[in-house]
Image 1 (cartoon, rainbow, N blue to C red):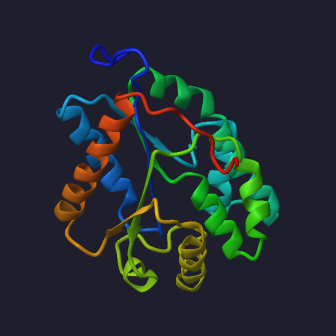
Image 2 (cartoon, rainbow, N blue to C red):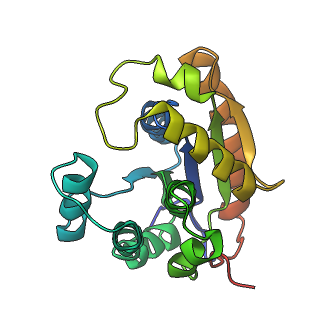
Length: 215
């Protein structure tokens, strides 16, 4: 356990969401480094986690090396998150803040963009750990498509990303923090760090863990 964390103190669960090439991956890594430098233990999680057996199946699909029914791949993405639930809870309770690059919201946004019912898409993830903070890196699909490496995976297609953006609009609520991802990497990093620090401190003061989408 973090030596500076007293009884009831825990790490924060911070999720970064957004379209492909919005900058989530680089900002997630920078955020972990920033928190560590400030004395707050932090670790990075990415979904899908391609290191597990399920993750390897997902990776094959994303690289267009295999074909799967839309519902099948949605359930695999969800199972990949469930694989890590216990580990994530253990780390949080030991005072480690988790920075998560994509989470259940991505699963719902991308699958509903294919035409699947949004409530059906949510169901498999009910009961996962609920984030303390969701940061949405906001960028237009057109701007994202101009960034390096775009088009390398199955979902990196402009018209599909426009549908994903609309799905995110349905999912997000007033608790999400919207970050203008069009600004410089440094400006985005600074804004994210300042927001996250407040949530980290709140969780260290004993905020309870909760479960996703359970009433």
